[in-house]
Length: 598
Image (tube, rainbow, N blue to C red; front, side):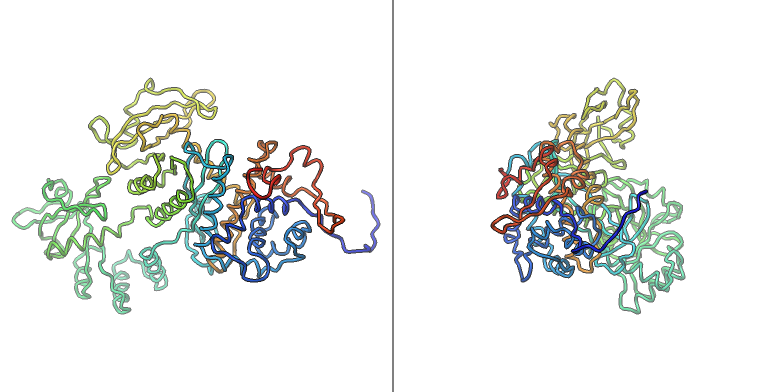
């Protein structure tokens, strides 16, 4: 090891400038993002232009910082970026104030202009053969208890519950390009928020609602607070004579879910009958459809049991034909029907409708912005019949999605569940195909589904190197005339949205937000996706970079070193690396900054 001498420098050392400011600024001009800001009603309110501030936020991940505070400090260390912006330093409050001053509606309107601009160039325009993929990703913020809209989420990657956000987004993809479209942060609706608040209050009062005494104490507290529930649903040990007496005394309406071992004596009959036997009785002529909640009910009449005189109602879920017996106080049938509609509308089905509605809104924005893909694809979580029909109503020609067990599928006049359908096929029924250089065995059949109608089901077996089956799955396609191999191909395009999430989290600061305003958080998320578009277009429009990963382009291309000089006219000139230019060249959007047609 050589021992070096040290001395005081004549002048303060200057950090080495990089190419990222130049490349980001040319990308910004090529997509006419400043004009898009004006079109969305986002204008300068004083100080530095809004476009300059947002360009800096776009570079948060590229500059390898993890907060807006660190970003403001890093800007002053990049002389080339300062030259592009025409500044010497940047205060962090300018970043926070600018992001907070833009509404979510304005952010989305701006993104709509960006997507429309992409559709004007044949190299970046969407194709009818492409897909619009929808999905969600979680961002953990376990110390962000004071952040707006923070809630308990299930972090799929670690299989734990934590504080955070669910980010729902859409993405366009074909086999040559892909880019994110629109995003939103899922928030529970008012009813869900009320249930969450109720659970928090229970915890604060140390109420275990599974215990009868605690449950009665909780109900009395609610009545005293003037928050009497519209109806209380009882089951298990809570469905008891004592509990009925307590509720009747408080004037609280109740509905009980009977287990199958309880005995009831129907009026006009002499022998007590188990609930299981009552559910087996033929009630075909008595059904009353509750279409708005997806159930139908049938009245068995009044009966006597340990609870006293009650009314018995059979309830069937219309999707899966599962029946349950409900017990209510004797009252008018119209009142019972109204009460059952209220109870069943609160029955959780595992899929928050608010998240599905948010996805539909994002898909609608994509159609309005000119996305021409005819296929929408999602993961199995979105396999909800009404949602699929709503997606088709937006103008998509087909929906491709993995089929889910637990539904009734009609084939050959018989009803099967998904595992039972697999048992119908023989090995010779499958066809050997290749998709993306991987071997598969494929079988397509037309199957009936309630609410949706006849659909195409593609049964897929993915093969390993030795020809063994390594993965089995079923894809449902609403288009009966779409080729089975194309069903598999378009579903494979859905993977690009997972790639986008991973890349944005690793390289573009998706999740590195710590603000106390909703608009700032949304703005940072949107700029992470826009940064992904920037690097994706850099690779797409630079032939020599087509085999490079976006992470490599960020590290070695955007962060390549440059020289700064001043021309005879006093203009600042950025000297790019000769190796960079000789080996890779510049993206097409750098060759003509006024448009994408350079």
